[in-house]
Length: 110
Length: 118
Image 1: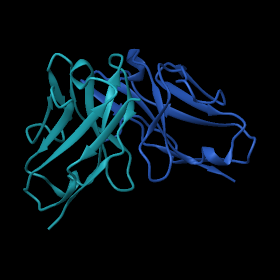
Image 2: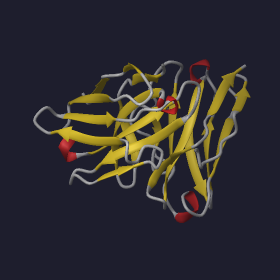
Image 3: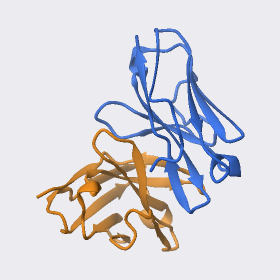
């Protein structure tokens, strides 16, 4: 049911930079709708990480950054920390009148 | 502090009904766009339904005709009435406020587990 595609997993050593891609289509990201990102720690509710493609809510470290181009978006985590180990989801809106999420990416800190 | 607290989850047989509640504090449900999002065990997030401040409602195709979103303004509470439940409706159900338009979800409640099984 997810219409936004993400890699199932990414990993990196502490201090490294990792990126997560989010690929959509002409009916969602490519139609100009913004992309938002959430972090879900094990056993907890999702938490907003990035909104409006590249904006961080108050309290989110500047190690997290987002970008969007064409029918895709990316989340970058620089200076990876152990506490960043979590699932990450992108989200946008689809012209079929529904909000859509990505398939989710598990980030592992080696 | 804005807080959303869901309740009403539990075990229900296929074909049965359940009503979820989401009590809000720190902001007014009726003045905001409110939504339900679910997550099946070990799976990703799926948008379920939204109610706009003006009262318009929309549903995912997977629940259309079976689920009804509503709110009680004086109780500052959001609801999800779920009928004709199926095994594939088994999930943690989160309520969330929808910010901007079409927007993003923030904040989220802690979630309530619905299990549909005989």
